[in-house]
Image (cartoon, rainbow, N blue to C red; front, top):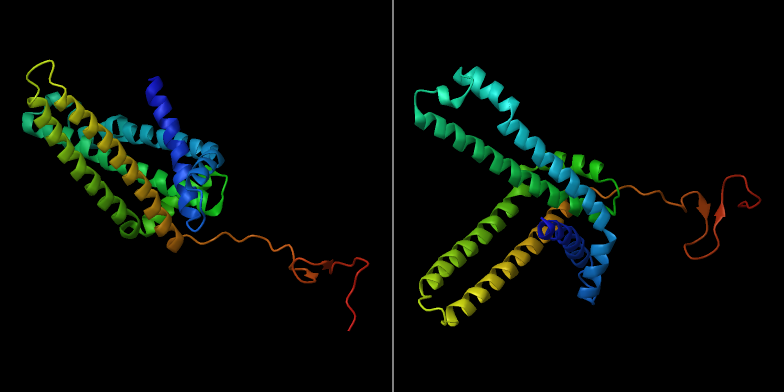
Amino acid sequence: AVLAFLAVMLGAFSAGGWLQVFLQRTEGHSLRRFFYGGSRYFFRFLRVLVLTLLSLQLAGFVVYGAPWEWLVHDLLLGVSSLRELDSELVARQVGWLQDGLFLVATALILTWGDYTRTRLALHDGVSALWAGLCTWITLIVHPIRTLRPMLLLLLCELAVLWGAWLLTDFLQARIVTPGDWVPLLLLWLVGLGVIAWRCIVRAARYAAALEISGGLVRAPRRPDPWKESVGGPGGPQYPLDGDEFSVSF
């Protein structure tokens, strides 16, 4: 549990680091910018993490809780429990449907979290709740454009993980004696390669989210402090609100 908590905190920190690096591509000192972004956005992304966990809990309640039982068991199937069904295959299919829906909901919520963090970093926002609501609207209005790169990256990640699993299974079968250290070394290297690959894919997700968000999300309107004044930027400014300064023609 402690290691899982630390991994989640590290994920929130690294998200800010990746986004800071991608937002300042032309500048050097990538490692410094990574740690700066991680510390700068950490608490904002921590709030996004809390919203993500609440959303996952809500999705689990809808798919596995009372709403599912009322809609599927009571209305569609007319039973109070799957044990009352005559066909075991139908019961298994209902369970597979539940798991599939929760898997899709989990993927959508995690993608929503990536886009929400990207929006906060792109606009230097503070409210995770407002950014999350705006992100849901963007995902609903532009589903193909926002979800397609994430799906392609997921397929790339799964392909490499599948290959690593096959290689791991092959190496484990080659361990015949306790003193055979070569397969163990190769297993260790495969594990490191998988971790590195997942980090690369994670960074690629934020790069894709930043690229898509830059074309879909409007920049916030910020007030112009020099709109009601006379004088060039960098020099003296004279407000036109009835002060002692005035302009004569």
